[in-house]
Length: 149
Ligand SMILES: [Zn+2]
Image (cartoon, rainbow, N blue to C red; front, side):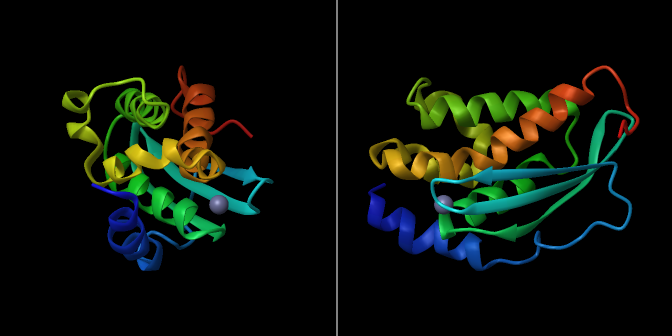
């Protein structure tokens, strides 16, 4: 897959898809992810119950890459356990750094479109913003299932 294909197809498609861009009614976790180098501001909203991400959405603004990466991430982690979601975050971040092989990428679904973003160093932060933000939320939530303000 070349970079043109990434831009024109998956990323643009996902950045225009607004189904994951909404406010949750009763989020248990809200966290702002900010990438000053591009101006991306993505607020993730999660509803975690019994160690499972029951629902997740985002609001905010940013470039096509950050929006698409966030939307794709939401599709992938919705309905999985906190532990599994953390594993997927680690995997995505490793992939973007070029640290894991293609045979380990199956679980990342459409997110593998960002594999070559490492060739565009200025955009790496856009691609990983939502994943780092989610990782922060989940790591702080590790041992408890309830919301801690
Ligand atoms: Zn950006």
